[in-house]
Length: 199
Image 1: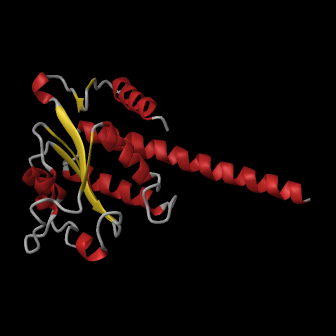
Image 2: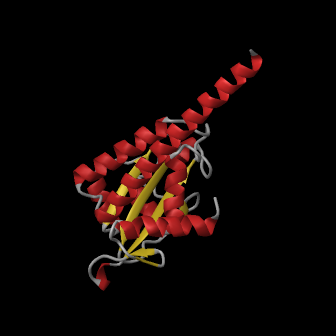
Image 3: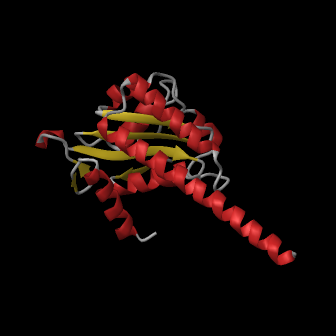
């Protein structure tokens, strides 16, 4: 998908929802409420199983959100990835995020080795890929959608997901659900066409 088109589509999504976009930031009612949207994570692409297990959550999402200095946060933890989707008024570095995710007895390296970071549009694009199963070991697997829904539900119940992440996760989940329906329908049509040709 064309990067410029995707960026425009993301901005239009938020504008239709009543949240104006300023660069990579989402603007709320007051200028002081401008939030930086970002994702910090580690996955099968960047680290082995033993390393990833050191960052599995051992505390409530609300505690993680407060320790990282974020206004909003959603924690996604599976056997293949540990990711923090968050929004903050001040810049939260990758190293700060890694330290918040780490277990106290196993702190990460000072350079945040193995962690990746996405901001603004790139964060939204990455979440779409994750939820649609395009960033999984088995491309197109469907289990990740349920895992993301569960992570979002936990953040919603704890109060760590605010207006920005509510809108982001709701729209991404809805969009990827539609994408899966399209893929299933297309597969059925192709199979039907193949059978008709053989007969």
